[in-house]
Length: 68
Image (cartoon, rainbow, N blue to C red; front, side, top):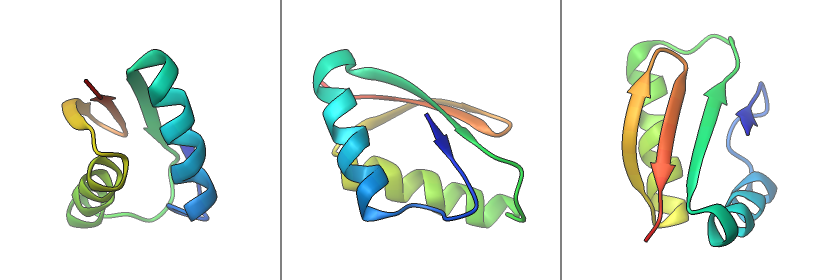
C-alpha cells in the first residue's frame, strides 16, 4: 500500500484495517513528497496508532506493520 500526497485519510485507514484483518503483515511505502524525518515518523506513528498495529521495521520511505 502507498501513502501519497493526500496523506493519511480516513478512507485509507479503513482500507488498511480491512487488509490487516486478512494479511496481518503489510508493507507501506511513503511516496516522495515533502516530508522531513520528524513528519515521516509522526505519520508512521499515526498509522500504527489508528490501525492498532505494531511497527516491525522502517527503512527509508518504506515501513512494515503487523497486527496480532
